[in-house]
Image 1 (cartoon, rainbow, N blue to C red):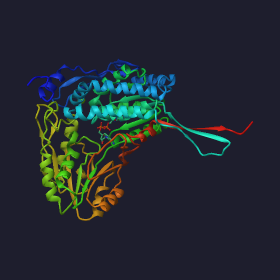
Image 2 (image 1 turned 30 degrees about the vertical axis):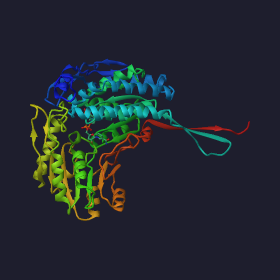
Image 3 (image 1 turned 180 degrees about the vertical axis):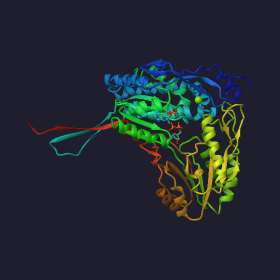
Image 4 (image 1 turned 120 degrees about the vertical axis):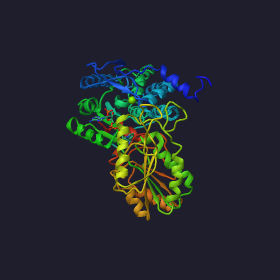
Length: 503
Ligand code: NAP
Ligand code: MG
């Protein structure tokens, strides 16, 4: 066994040791300290080690970034470039990210605790795919001509909006950022990213790659720092033309206020979820179903907006399914995320670990039956690890059934009738996603129609493709990431009337 063998823990540990993360802001094509010099510690949840410092940007840094983005936008070096030109540079950007895949995957793992295998095989390739998809799209989007009277010509064109601020969460740090910046940049906007405090390192690194790819300075800026200061300053800024937010429902509501209190900028919100998997007694194969249910909640430590956090199962098959779900869940054992064999990594930080554990305590106090896990464990000393946890006999009113835990905690509720299943599924303020498991085509279709959620997975969970939009109903937000529909958030329609009456 050598340290060149990528299937070994040693390889990734040794590679991680060599990385010196950059924590500065990236504005106008250069790394820069915050104007006050203030910094925040970047902490690894693997073992609570300090990885370095990130710039703690405040209102003045945001002013600087917005001015830089505005200048780039008005200069037209990007916004007025031919779509084929933007495509070429975005494709180069994607290539550079791909060729630095290992370093970025390690940074993601160190910073937020996800398993290296996932960072390497899912997160970074998905970022590359996202950028390529929008690069390839942008020179294939046509305008329209309206069916008006013959003596007029009305052109309907899409124009970039201007300066877009994207405030993003920590669960898929670079991927969630790319779902914003890829379509926004492809459309010709300038973009400012405010990453989450817990996980700023990859987007900071990647901003420099944009310059190497030939994307002009100021077109992609990054301002790390706290949400309450840097995020708020972006939200309230009068020269930010649109806000794209992914994060909690609670913070999403602030962005609507920021818009109302400032320049009425459009806001798109990708917020929380409490997604159900509804399993009917005629589900095809309970082993496959159990595997998907366990993956649906334990992938990424349950820190997924569309985690299938509620299993709603017909009473006739509950015991059988539960047994299999427990068996599948045992494949998710907390371990060092730098070990390629690990499938359940560290929670993002101490605060989130404590928050999830307080839900476990509440679940017990409310009378749910703990059937698996439920403990904080220490596969690495001083780290943030929680076992894959399952509660049975959960009633819809319990807090573990209503609130987004954002951790590896599955709650199980049984039902007798289809109407009851639908009512339970729709009983939260969220509406991001749902799984429906049945062989009966009528059940599958009619239940899918009645579930108030942006994505429905029938006999599967968390299928995804860049061509398919993603986003929520209800308090899971509005606006869609991914697909051609994401362009709607980053462009505005212009109607141009040309009078054709002969002179
Ligand atoms: P969060 O606490 O809402 O934070 C999201 C972002 O908002 C962070 O950059 C945060 O900065 C910033 N922020 C916090 N308070 C702010 C304020 N008062 N004003 C302006 N910005 C502020 O969410 P999170 O804990 O990072 O991420 C988890 C949440 O994201 C979950 O609810 C999850 O469901 C949601 N999510 C949704 C989707 C989707 O597509 N629907 C995808 C992924 C995640 P700080 O770093 O300083 O807190
Ligand atoms: Mg961190």
